[in-house]
Amino acid sequence: MTVLIAGAGIAGLTLALSCHQAGIDCRIYEQVKVVGPLGVGINLQPHAVRELYELGLEEELEAIGVRTREVAYFSRKGGQIWAEPRGMEAGYNWPQYSLHRGHLQMMLFDAVQQRLGPEAIITRSGVSGYSTARSSAKIELAGSGETILGDIVVGCDGIHSAIRRQMMPDEGPPVWGGAVLWRATSLAEPFLTGATMAMAGHERQKFVTYPLSGPDPETGRALVNWIAELKYDPSQGWNREDWNRQGKLEDFLPHFEDWNFDWLDIPAMIRSANVCFEYPMVDRDPIESWTDGRVTLMGDAAHPMYPIGSNGASQAIVDARVLVRAFQDHGLSADALAAYEAERRPATTRIVLANRQNGPDQVMELVEQRCGGTFGDISEVLSRDELEETAAAYKTLAGFDVGGLNSRQPIVKAL
Image (tube, helix red, strand yellow):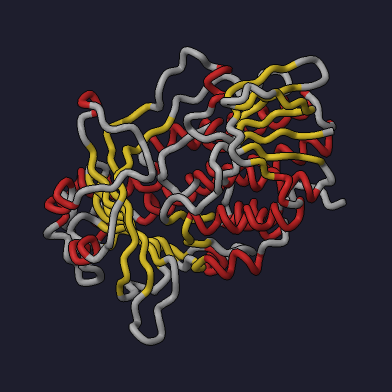
């Protein structure tokens, strides 16, 4: 009884830990020789943090993350549109964390090796395809062509998933809607609460920033993540998405030169970064099925989404937990995959589509449309009801409304 997992990213590693917690044998097959910390900053919402806490990773998360206290939206002129508490400050039983994606991946990687043993992750073994039968499934390894037999195969192999490509051979490349991100970290003085996730701008030009560490006691500076975003005509095309492609300041900094607000000097923060990375913001159209027999998809392989609303990693973690609950209810079977997909595919489809419409960031676009980003009292531009409804609707859509999350039972049943 074995689950074969393609990919040692956040989805695959969380799935392995969840299988182990439920007493289910599993192995991860990863294409790289050495798993290393990729990416820059991400946020984990309370619904995902709850799942990692229930995996016994509370201390590890606390060591690598900053508890996000607030999210705040600003116009391109720096005027505050809306701010609300986050995590335990907002009444959740679990915090929200700002942290480095690579640190989260390595934390999960270390936990898998400690709990399941080093042999649980087979590197230099990328999955190139699969086959499925009535009571089993196989993966094929790239290069060698070796096949591995298991009960279930789960594609956690990202936006360029080979398993999804086999399921959807005519799908083509990811969809680019015109936005390009430049991402980096800088050492900077804390701003606002010191643990605020701040967003300024509108749909065509945006700056997002939040701390990844507390302030250094000697310098007073913290490691701060930032993302500069510009939107272009998508018909012109762009480079293939790649977290490791270095960006050029001259491509985007001139657009932010006058974004020096009383709470943050954005051009100075951009200039202080040692290096930035360029990344076209892409997703994929939702598909009608994630599953072929005893093979299914998870995380970015199943539902790649725009990084709006801080939900990509969080949804991958929830995927893993729901799938393992389905294994507990139905065994390692096609019925389990059907139950998992019936719950997760509609939920994540709604988020993918909402993020294409700007998600909760839409309040900034509304302000830009109504007043060009200049206002005295925000209530003259957007009512408090509009602001609260936008924030609450997205939390409900993404599965982290405070009442629902605090009151629901654990996803994975304790042994």
